[in-house]
Length: 95
Image (cartoon, rainbow, N blue to C red; front, side):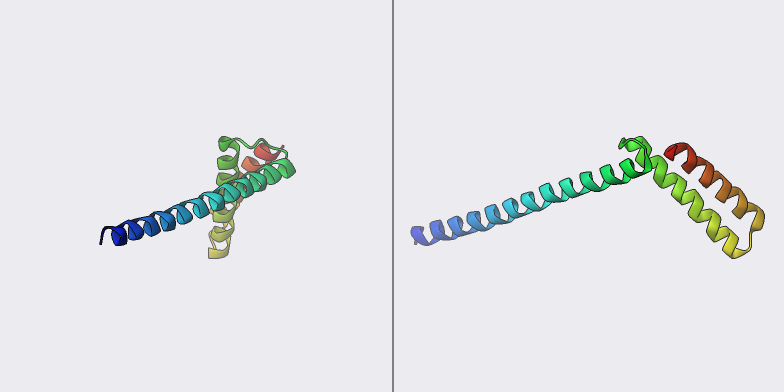
């Protein structure tokens, strides 16, 4: 009976090791893919790959998106203001 539980423990340990090693390999490759994506994006836009720069890019795109949606809803002045702020912010980030 002891050999049976030893076998179950061995098989469970092997299954857990297989899952952990598979996930480790997946996330290592996923990390490399994200680094390559952000490096290519920042390189094409002419900005650094720092967290501040990427958050600034997201914020500028958010302002631009909100401005366009405001224009589509019919809020002309608010939409123009948000589009202008978004384009100005993106211009500072990209230049």
